[in-house]
Amino acid sequence: MVTSVAVSSSGSLGKFLVDGRGHSLYTFAKDQKNVSNCSGGCAVAWPPAEASSVPALPAGTPGTLALIARAPGGQQLTYNGAPLYFFKADVAAGSTKGNGVGGVWHLATVAAS
Image 1 (cartoon, helix red, strand yellow):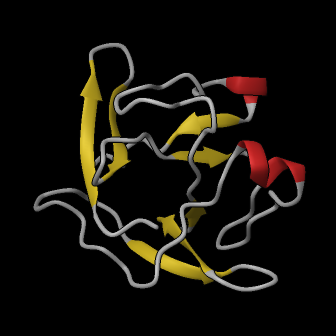
Image 2: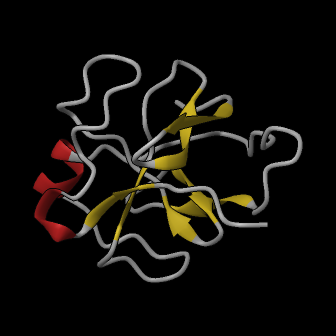
């Protein structure tokens, strides 16, 4: 359950969102705005970033966090309308192994202001 969001950065990857424990957040290119298309086995490998309330973005971070409903229940965090996920293989904080997987999974990069 995501209770806070922070911004991390890497010289080659730029700025991207992480949860309060430092785990990278990802977007899925096959999603639509405010609609998750990752369920079943997909959601096992790429767990949705679930939240019960919308955390605040760090001061000065452009963009908007919000929640969308997930079937069969629960709420998933979005960034500028893009549903957010974790990558099961990212077992340690700071890991970005999911970036670029299948050409459709990408770090949730911070929007330019």
